Length: 245
Ligand code: PEP
Image (cartoon, rainbow, N blue to C red; front, side, top):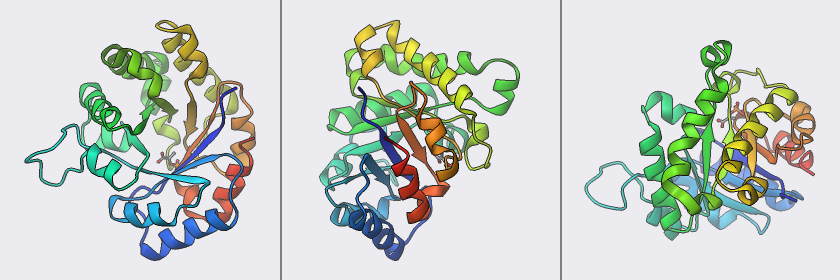
């Protein structure tokens, strides 16, 4: 049995006041499922301080380097030092706007794992790739380098399937589309390690809302969600968490 995880990606939204308000709501009304919150870097320390027992905190990105002359970068050791437990790696907005490729993404995963962080590796196809019938090819490619280079350390990954065409668009994958993609992702682990493929958690991300969460989370290979826009509203996010049973 894989426990459900609901993760909140605040992206580049927030303030000290919003951090206090959203984490206060989660502390006052603790969700029954596992919850991870990913605020922007400047609010990490505040978030770690305010998160109750029920919530753990993560960063939205991490440097591929351990330390050194990399202006503007934040290392995995710094994140661990501030009490972060999780880190998002390879989000489609990083791949698209910062040209992150699978080798760089894998280096970030390695730095995170070295520091004991739990990385959530984001994968997903664009609309053009889906329409060309290439969704599985893309998913297999995005998973191949990390799985090959990480070897047994891949056991410490969580995967987020985030079809790019569903992120921030209001257009959600159907439960059947999500299930197919998640089963395919799991099959990529099965090819290497059958036990790991049963244990690895695969989250769905892309316009998850309270209205569609229960349907998505009821699929056998969907182990929770990575939530963007809807995570900025405490009531909406708590309703999504309530759907993760
Ligand atoms: C995301 O940014 O990871 C995401 C899934 O965003 P949204 O829920 O807004 O589509």
